[in-house]
Length: 194
Image (cartoon, rainbow, N blue to C red; front, top):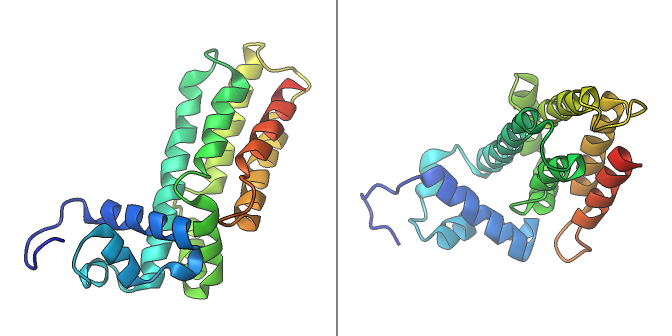
């Protein structure tokens, strides 16, 4: 435990990672500020020193993880012509399920103030599923130009199907149910390989 008055390095990520572990282990109902700070091994007031409350904390956590996946999706453009198209897309799609993604999604939608904060941030331009969809569309367009994706594949539709399915699986999955990743992998393969 960090002693009182001593700076905690990379506090946001430390608290975010702790929250993911708490939710992954105990589900959305297990998440409290005390559970997070205990898991992070830091003082009980640290979360509230950096966030206005648990709703802001959860919103910032979800937005941070969306931004990470959107950044990974942006990297797709550099992969055109390299590796397997399905594997490249699958890496981005599955990134949404990393870090307790389904449980965090359930947590976010179960807290009205958190859901509102996330929606407002996305409307203001924070990267989210739309940014991921646009990156997937651009990648598939480039791969189609290279002849690695059939001309019959519509990049916009495939991108929407991938992101929409990921969203659906995130919203309908929770701890201790079958892992949604295999379904996502099968969908990506079916969409790009036929």
